[in-house]
Length: 112
Image (tube, rainbow, N blue to C red; front, side, top):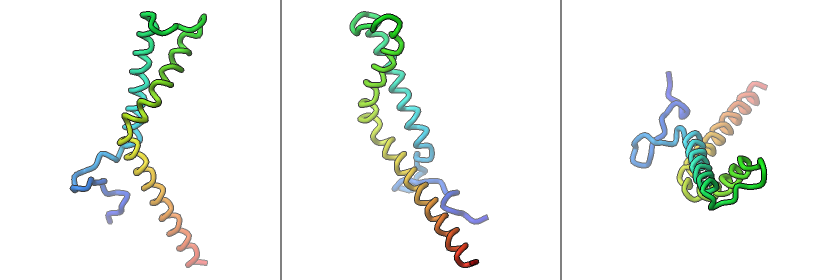
């Protein structure tokens, strides 16, 4: 069995195994964690009366929306490195797919 670039483990600059193999999953989990933490903080602040609890039965929706608004800029700043790793991983996959498609097209051109 020959080794292809898809089978090789990604490495960092110094040759050690990289952490980018699950960059998308790690970024998503960390982003969800920041959202949950913001939701808990917003809920506690609403419970103690620092924030308004909203009108009528809209309390859970209000708290969810407020937590989303607060967590978005936090994750933008705090998860910059993870987002860069994820985008590099996605860009590499796109390039690999483009090369594979080009190779398949050239094989079809040779047969025809």
